[in-house]
Each structure stands twice: as C-alpha cells, then as structure tokens.
Image (tube, rainbow, N blue to C red):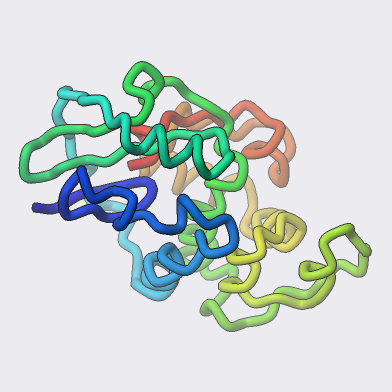
Length: 203
C-alpha cells in the first residue's frame, strides 16, 4: 500500500503512534522528515510532469488528531492512500481550506532555487546578512540543507530575491501551487502576502 502524506508514511492506520513518533516528542520531530527532505533537495526535479488527479473520498483520522493534540501543537495531518484512492484526514472539513503557506513554502522554494540554478547544489553557503536575530543558529552562513533544517527565513528571502519574481511565478504556475498569487514583495508573498494553498493541494 502506498501513501502520500504531509507528515510521513504509515503501514497501518491503527499503528499511527508508532509510525509517527516525532508527533509525540517535540525535540525529535525533524529526524524522520530529514531523509525525505534530503531526497527532495538532491534529486533532479522535473516540473513539467502532469499533475495527478486524486479521488474525492475523505475519511476521518481521529488517531492523528489525538497525536497532534498530545504534542501540544495546532495543525492537521492528511494522508493519501494511493492503493485505495482515499484521503485520511485529522480535520476532514478543512482539507480544502486554503491557508498562507508560511514555512511550508520552503519545500517549494528549495526546489525552485535548485531547478532555476540560483544555487548549484545543497552544500553551497548562503551568506549571512549580518543582522543579529534572536535565534542564534541562523546568525551565520548556512547551506541550503541547514537553512531548511533551521527554518532560516532571512537566507530563504535572500535566495528568493535572487531567483526573482518572474522565475518564481513560472514554477508556481507550472506546479499549480495554490492560488498562484505571488503579487507584492517577492520576499514576503508566502509569509504576509496573498499566496494561499490548501493541505490537499500541498500533497
């Protein structure tokens, strides 16, 4: 059984607590995602692949809602079961509601940055802008992997500015990303701007 998930992979829905241990331990959430993100950042991305249309069946996933609540966070978990063409959602009524992407846009922007050649690879250093911020870990030069891991917004803003609005719009349109609206400041459209995307569209 194949699953596409915004949080991970589960072999059987009743085993979600074992399949998603990072949802229960605040400090360990990143490790299961890191392999997946590393794959995304190192594989050659072809944006011209046609989008796949998934089924309309959405089933509730109360186990996921409980995990999120126990972790002390607000959020959603959405899993697509390819074999059964079925969606499993912790919040079924909200899967099509669009939200500002905020930090989740780092996935998309990382792919665009690499595909457009703004950075040649994931190891090239992105210079620190010299502004001291409260999170000391981002007050330094970072490569793309570390910038992703540390959620280093200033480094990503710098890269998106270098990539440019025209190129960003090109890839936003090619992938059909949300409402595709990146008007306004090129380094703020996914944080404070008009761009919106639903959990379902993210998958």
